Image 1 (tube, helix red, strand yellow):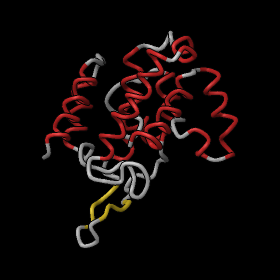
Image 2 (cartoon, rainbow, N blue to C red):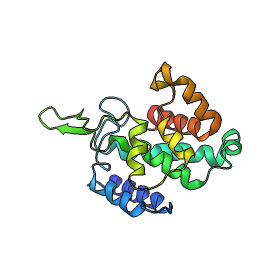
Image 3 (cartoon, rainbow, N blue to C red):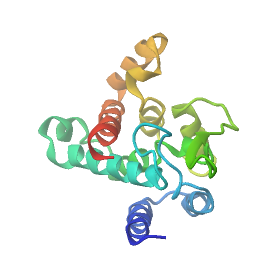
Image 4 (cartoon, rainbow, N blue to C red):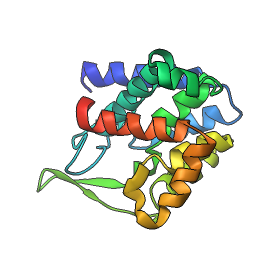
Length: 183
């Protein structure tokens, strides 16, 4: 394993270590035993390479934490959001991609191999809650992290979720910033 990925894993685990919830050790064991640290973030867009999911998650964390600490408009709107919610939503929003891709060596590419078709954000919430309890704010932020890309039929619910918790929009923006500018 290359030095950069070892450092990225250490950074991910240090950040996750700041979160104190019942079941965190089991969640981290699940992540370590999965392909989270080697899986791509996608097959042809952002992070479409080995380890892309890990790097994308850290980039979302950087973008979201910057908003949380530095951007005046977000600092005010997220002032009631605990730091561990920032960490959890940023780093775990795409756990639905664990065991979602498989590498095909003869084509030297990753391809989708969906074994549990639960949706995207919903699947991440369900997987995480198999191990730890999420707050309502965290559930909604992770569920809606794809923003309006979920389809027009869901725009009303997406807007309602943003009205309840600004973290919903902040996470979506951070995900887009990471996908478009950082990955």
